[in-house]
Length: 617
Ligand code: ADP
Ligand code: MG
Image 1: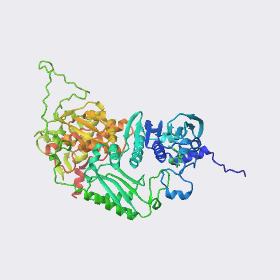
Image 2: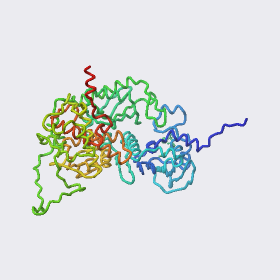
Image 3: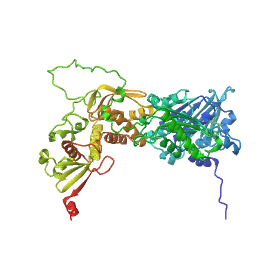
Image 4: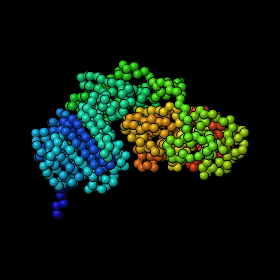
């Protein structure tokens, strides 16, 4: 029988290896940034186009490569970082496998330019799919520039597998954060599609964190330092009262390398025990220094996990040092269930001096001119709310003693007639109470065939959700102007998330007077959002988008409506007057899809008289 075994050609072997090293543009970013750091760069520039799908370029001012090294660097197992297997145990560089450049060159168009300090001219090499297209002498500054274009151009299946630009960009930024946080002594700049996203000068660790996550971060940081024989800990934890709903700001670095460790994360959580509100996560930026011989990080090129020799000791030291810091900086328990947050001065007003309310006079006002009821679409025009919508009952505005159906003029949906058929006698509801609240959670209501049990939180979410979506899609907003503008601080990341949904937010009624690099100023809010809730609503929105990045514009609008409905809906535990209960029930059945909440959970159940009768048998 003929021989059937063949040696795979190099470019095929490289493509296969590339599958391990390069999963997405962010993997390229990580490898190139790490190479630049290993080359002792002091300034590193990262240029991205289309979330890295079209271009990832890293320019450094490091040691550069000789002509021969430049050519060799694309060979598999070509590395300047180890010479023997033993070197692995004393590793002080990021790379060592010599696989990254070979893998990247196998699946992209790569252009490398590099020059060493002592040389007059540098080298330029162009490689496409492992094939060297040209090698030339060029004039270029000291250091290295590697441009990786059209990732996966020769593996369409992998290219199609990439996620939407926002998702891929998120991964790129995460990787950039990790590298930049581990190296505050190196300056980093990042551009996406030609505009600057981050500009991080060389600084200390605290400043680096602040430069990445925004000025407001500074006051939230509590330093942590501990030095023992086996472990040195340095860095910061976030004060518990600023804990976030996302796990975004949790970073461990072991010997300057970002790692994930559920076990060490647990150590931090236990240090924070009793200090965090439900559903929030502590932030931390912690550097651990251990003897390189006591850890094993060489598991996999892209893995960020690590094995420690003595995990339990590390756990105990880490937990104790975080606890110690929280205690030392007298971070007393902040949970105070009794306090009524409505009585607090809104955070942003605390240190502001009182201002005289301004009276605005319309100089062009002419009492004899007929009033124009437009203003549609313009951001600054405030349309007076038509008939008081029923939600206003929940924001502490005047509540009317009786209700009439005109109040729902805004809420009429196609299925409105359903209301008549499902409820026993709508006339009767105006005089006698037809609903009843159970445990401040469910509303019971009579229907022809028996009774309805409505979940008040879910029902209200449904009502708000449809209302918000309506405003977003018909692009007509109803705003209430704030007496004092509210200024809120965010990280540049968070700002860019808000910017993506800015238009939709405006359609729900937000009016932004300023959209800065780390703050926004709001002068108008949707009719059902109290000023004191604005920051909560936006933070929840950011957290929701971060947790589940929308793939398309439609899903972004949908997510926004869901998120706001969730934040604004009356919660379980809130007692409602008879009028409020009825409004809620009527509004629910004015919805297009009254039976499910925006997250597809049932909003009500029915119990027929037959079913009830059976229970009494
Ligand atoms: P590794 O980093 O594991 O050694 P790479 O494939 O990432 O493998 O890089 C191969 C070699 O190319 C490195 O060992 C280094 O000598 C050289 N190299 C790569 N990037 C740079 C750079 N930005 N500056 C200088 N040398 C570099
Ligand atoms: Mg490398």
